[in-house]
Length: 334
Ligand code: PEP
Ligand code: MN
Image 1: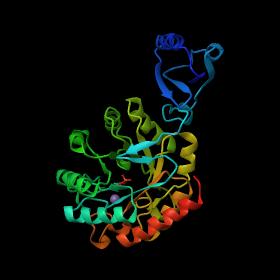
Image 2 (image 1 turned 120 degrees about the vertical axis):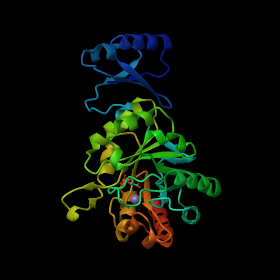
Image 3 (image 1 turned 90 degrees about the horizontal axis):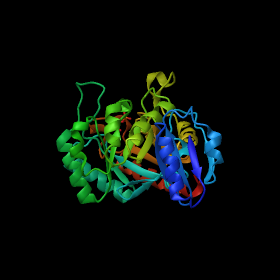
Image 4 (image 1 turned 30 degrees about the vertical axis):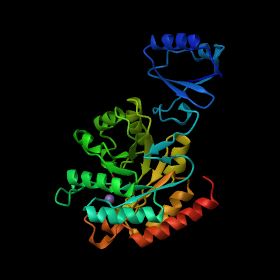
């Protein structure tokens, strides 16, 4: 249930309401907008008489939320969430560009790619040090060394950085990272999500290959419920009957999620297609359908990439892509 308070309510009356609700084992989350205060009630509200709440003089309205996701629900906040990733605001209405290699391979590789991304107009650099690979026999990432390379790149190129976590035991290594990614394979690793909810860095939560949008939001809920409000959702393609078993980028997820949640939504057209030849088209389509950001794999030599080379665009293609994104941003208002 959501209780929307009238402007400038008397604090002692609100506190009395809060204490009464807590006595019924309900958890209360406050959301303070520029003019309105919302009280979001978590727990079993079935025994609560909504008409009593509505009759209180300082209550503007009370609404029952039927959906199982609550804190991420669009009605739970007056304003859309904007997440600050090292100074880059994701969710502010202007599509942001996250780009970088699938994996951090070496210092030279990452710096060359990051410098070029910065010059081309990218906003945030991505790069995996810990890689969730489907086969244990393929390249597993540069791990601790990769984390150090990311830190060096950040200092040298002055770009915010996002990288994936696979084990909460590695959290200390993320001190200099601006946003922590939870990959598709870990979307339902609830203990990991809970632990990330207890720290305050932004979390980029990717949709599982076979997860519904409701399941994605319930996963986000694990992070929000622990107190971290900075969650960004990412559509990265799902398994469907189309395309002979490869991944289908579900762009309809973007406008659908925007009707369901106040959280920012970005799109990863690289994992979502697996094919560098269609990454540009699908990135532009993501911008056109209202994504708050795009995350694209870029490599200085895709044919030699240690991971996901076939879906990586090169530095020149990225430069062209940014130009097109900017043109598109100018003609559509999302
Ligand atoms: C990645 O972004 O590097 C990645 C592994 O993505 P996903 O979890 O979507 O497969
Ligand atoms: Mn990849």
